[in-house]
Length: 124
Image (cartoon, rainbow, N blue to C red; front, side, top):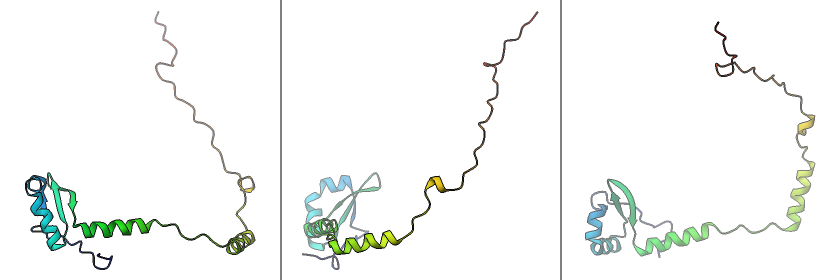
């Protein structure tokens, strides 16, 4: 099984990029080629890469790496946790919001009168 060091994820740009129409008509040949060369095939749709055909060995190796990537780290020992809490307790925290210097406040802006709010003109 390939490891992270020997995964071959290089793509042959001449033969390894295939439009989806060709991939659909020659899927068996593409699967055989990826198994033989060990290289992925990029499948495009309207000129943009939309999928990848991988050899099963590379897929399995990537899946294993992804599963092991999310493993939780071991929990801290209680003695270590107590030491961390003690160290944090010795650290002086910043002043609370009430103790901070008062900030200037500005008065709300006066709203301009619009025609809709203006008094109606009286024409005599």
